Length: 107
Image (cartoon, rainbow, N blue to C red; front, side, top):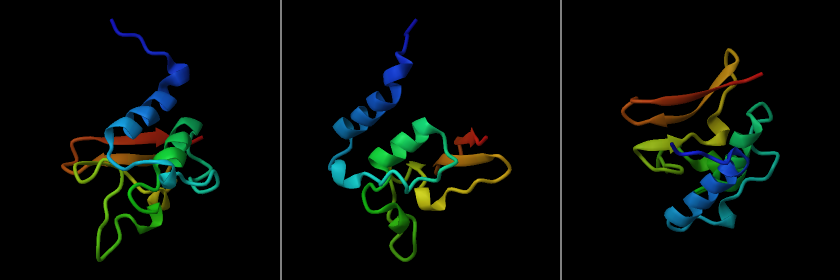
């Protein structure tokens, strides 16, 4: 059985993305105040580190160019500018084929 060190889970995810996604770097960081205040700290850390990849998050998924964010067209981290706090939950990632969606309860 595999065990995880949850203390380092988010930094490990961020490091993995930096190693596997071409061109991602510190220029893609978001300012601490940009992600919504109501998202949980681990998710906020992911947005702070990767939220402006490949372009600023407020330019992603906008007509006419439809520039995709992190993970591209198949599965995507939704741009922070599009996150909504509805009914105490928020979707932050989705599959293009709607095979999965990840929701977070907001308290």
